[in-house]
Image (cartoon, rainbow, N blue to C red; front, side, top):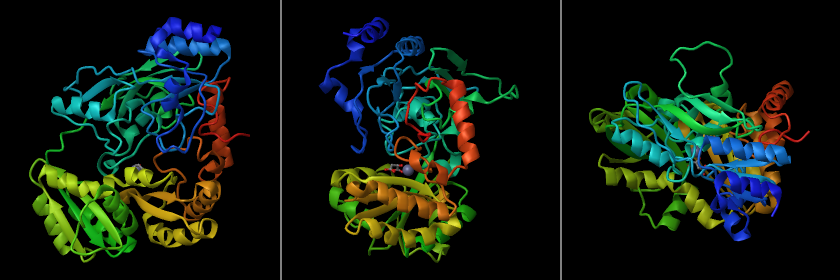
Length: 453
Ligand code: MLT
Ligand code: ZN
């Protein structure tokens, strides 16, 4: 037994330092099964003080740390490269009482998105971020990756919900700024700097978030359109005419056919369409009429199914929300997450099959994503062996269309070699200096976000 493991057991107790291969295994592979790495051990602290003590012990031993939340990340950022201590935040599940006056709440980093949503709803409020992995994704991970999801069209990404954080530096120093004054211009916004920093600057242990009014009444439409152009024309109408727009999601015939066969779902509409848009409206009063009126006036609509009751809405959402699990049930995808300006989306979608076929002729490409932001999830099945080539071709095409190589999943380990397609040399150098200021020994999440020199 090494001195470090002994020290860690002294901090968190014997049961929360895992060294057996079979106990570590589920922490060492990511959700997609594409990224693996062996952890020296897994350590599961219970609170900020224990996280600080764990990081001090690792710093004393000169050992690097990989930080993991719900392990639902899609870019390998939460699995070790090899030999790190894996710091799991899964036990930081404290839910503090909702502050209904400020419409805010403070929660532990390991609280799942679903638990936060339920906690907020029990107090008559809601949380402004939602995504399909809600039952497992943790709040700390959402903040560390600045997660997006299906509500960005109304509330913005996770960073827009964050009021303050408590976080621990690699040397064990605790930075606590959970409840800053409502207007506060006293220097660098360290909280916002940690949003999207992917665990490379500090370990987020507690988060204070703002809450939003409850969704109220809801209506969902699954709309068949003639392709990307039609989807964009529908989006423009939805944005111009719907005061209650809460989601606008995009998928294509290939993906709908896959989710139908994996999930044994019936045909959603009277005929098949090249593309589909899921629109959700929510408001204090039933938004169904507003939604139906907009659809009736929009010439891009081929056919539409509309549901206002909870069961009907869930059935329509399933055609979009089960894409990820249907793809993973079929194979290990090369998963890319990009966005381009809306006026480039049609060209990108048209050009993608050609660039992918050039390096992976037999691959199956499934596109879906968040229409409002021009954010496409490009999933390529049957291309694992040429994953780097596919990634390179697709990301270069995205950069040529002035897009982002990582729209919402983060850079992780998967995209570091391509960071310079989205960020300038000067920006990357400035990021390296920020990293060095927070973590001079490079102990937190080595190999994540910043490319090797
Ligand atoms: C989604 O939008 O469903 C998620 O980002 C998951 C994914 O891309 O697979
Ligand atoms: Zn997404």
